[in-house]
Each structure stands twice: as C-alpha cells, then as structure tokens.
Image (tube, rainbow, N blue to C red):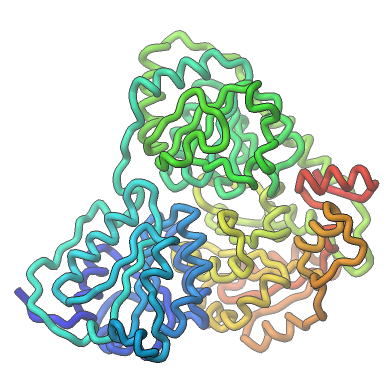
Length: 571
C-alpha cells in the first residue's frame, strides 16, 4: 500500500491507462491537481476556452482510436457541453474530469457551484462524483471500461477540490489494458442473422453498402473493402464516415446524403434494391431527411451496428445485426467464402461514373460574383496537394460541403473530421488542435467566418503548439448556411440576422504570429496552399467566397430550388 493524495492517484491511473495528453484550462478548483502535474510525463494541452478543449479532445480521440482526457474547472464546466454532446452523439470516448467546490457548498450558493452530475448525466454514458481518494482507482478503471465498451461515449468524473489534497493508503493501482483503446470488445452479431443477411444480399440485383462513422470507429475499412471486392458491391459513406475505404477505389461510391452527396451517388442509392447499413444511425443528414432511398417498402434494408437502438430505427429492416462492425463482417466474409465458394459476381467499376461527375463540376466554370473565388477551385487544388498523412477538419456548414463532395481520401482511415452529429459552430479550429497532437502530418482546418468568430482566442493555442496547422477561412461575411436555408427554402427576400460586418482576419492572424496570405484569384490558390503546407508552424489563409444563396452547393433540397429558380449550382 502507498500513501498518496488524490491528484497523485489520478495522474498515476491516467498514466497506467496509456494517457499521454490531457486537454483543458486552469481554475481555482484544479490548482491542487496542477501542483502534482509537473512530476508527470502526461502533457497538458492548455487551451483558451473550455469549449475548445472539449472539441480538441473529441477530435484527438477520433484521430488516435484511444479515449481522450478532458478537464475543466467549475467556473467553466458548462462551456464543455458542445464538445461532450458531439462526442456523445458521435460515439467518441472522452474521460471528462470537472473539478468542483466542496460537495454541497453549491447549496449555500458557493461561487461556481452547480449540480455538475445532473448537468452531464444526459450527455455522458455515466456521470459520477469522487467522494473519497480510495475510490479513485476503481472509478477510473470503470470510466475507461464504460467509455470504450459497447457504443463508446464520454464518461464524466466530478472531483471536489478537497480530493486533490486529501491522502489515503492506495492498494489497487492498476489498469485494465484492453480499455486503453476503443472499441475495447468486439462482439459478433447473432450467427443465424448473419446467414440471413448473406442470403439477402447474395440474392440482390443492385445492392449497396452504406457505411457511417461507426464503421470507422470499429476500424472496419479493410474488411468492408474485402467484402465489397469479393461480392462486387459499391461502398457509400456518410460524411462522417468519409475515408473508410480509399475514395479512388473502383467500388467506392463516395459520400452520399444531404451534406456533400453528389447527384450521381444519391441517385445510385435511389435505384438500389438492397441497402446494407453498417455503423450508421441513419440520421437526417446522411439520408436527406430520410428521403434518399425513396419508398422504403420498395427496398430490402439490412442494418449492422454496435448500438441496438440504432438498428432499424428509421427504416424497416429485414435483418438487424447488433455487434461490432469489423468482427461481424470478418465472420460474415468467412462464411461467404467457405459456404459459397463458387460465387462469380460480374465485375463492377464506378471509376468512370465518378470521374464524369467530378469533371462536370471541375469544368463547370460557373462565374463567381465579383470579388469572390470559387470554393470548387480551392478544394480541387487542396485535393491535389495534400499528402497522404494530412488530416482535414471542417465546420458543419459550407466549409465541409465542398471537401465532402470533391476531396478524395486516398489513404483509408479517419483523415477527415467533421461534427455532423450535433453540428455546432466553432469546431474546426479546436478539432485541428486535437488532431495535430494525434497526427504527424499537416493538419488543415476549413472554416467559415461565422464559425471562426467562436474560436479566435485559440489562435494563440495554435501558434503556441508549434504544430503544422493551416487554417483556411472561406469568408462571405454571413452565416451562410442559415442565409441559404432562409432564401432558398423559406422564401425570405431579405435575410434577417444572418449578415455581419467585415473583419480584417488576416491582420488578426498576423497579431497571433501566423504566417498569412489572402487569395484573391484562382491563380494564387496553388502557390499559397503549397507555401502553407511547407510551413512547419501556424498558417492562415483567407479567401472570399459567394454566399450559398448565390452559388448553391451540394445540398439536394437547395439544388432542387436552384434549378427551379435558374440559379447557378453544383451537384
């Protein structure tokens, strides 16, 4: 047994779980923890806002495949809710420590006191409070086990200020190694149902695999690709699932849905007779508000997910499979090869269909409004220049639409991070910070000016990190998504509460010490991007783009209205 204070026990247990980075912000209630931190090898990534720390932790977990650790003091505990909500809805494990004033002091109106447990219970898998130093090892083992098992999700741990300095004899300092990564366990779906699913898509005439970020979380890309090749079935992904298999693969249909799905890909799904959902919750975004597949009664749906609540939630499934995607598909492929050895499906190659669709966009030459540059050209050049080890983060608005549709992930894996589960603004820059601590290659943050205003303070964090992070601002001085929705779908003649004043963002970035550039013509795009990618520190690029109601991007509902009004659009 060893005499230790609470701060020492927490740091020791984190180290035993393989934690190398913690994202957070200091406060009075965490000083006791920090007094011990300098003795630890765990790097503390200081941000300038708890919201930034939460999004950075969420992105770090996505990029590493390991649970991330976040900490926040009681004054800023409410600021973490956007990132924790995104992690919860995206099935991303974050161990979230929030320090607090002494228990029940909030009942006396102690400053910064709030019922943190109640606050986070609905957006965490579990939320509990440390009351004794002796229970810390048990609670941390439980936190990592719960966060990484089944459907991964955040776990909240509330630590009153006194716990950091109180001491106890600790006899159970150990970790369970399998919970240092996620998914920690890989249950295989019911074997009988797997055979039923095989029979269903072996008899299909036009089947398709639709994979979400659950397939990425499971690391199922290689087996999805093998299954697709063995049966010659196309693989579509949701926007968060982008990159599961190389998008240049002959069977990759690329992104589908309402946030970057191109016409050819969405139309293919409309014509499919059998749809096999893998690791997707069939949300409104990936299904164009559940209209993407036409009449559900005209198709056969199969669904595999680790979360039983997702299976068959929005479409009537013939076979529902609850299990880990990688493990279940491995077994499924084993059954197919052993029990159906004579399969000889007709070869399928989607390359020309994709090339035709992409070339139509790249060669469209739609005139841009005066003073703006085409976001298509920006994405086209970025796609050509990005090395395989690059990682891209993107806001949920128009900043993500063009790369979701046009950028090709050639090296499979989670190379493209978006927050399309909740969709709060201010994600891309914090996510780039988290991704940069997880990724050796360059990180590109694609953002809009509506989003950038949320996180300008953390330009200091980007600069201080010394990481190769390039922030690309596609600026139009408006909340462009809301403006587009209002003008195109709600028949608003004069958008209300969407436009704001111009800001010299280049000058701001220079003030933080960034290398900066402003793109004002298509000819500048390649040299400016090349220079930024070669720079090993913080870079900032600004480019004016048209609002979404002037040049309509890849959003099916908007495109339909643009066609009716004879407005320029990309599809």
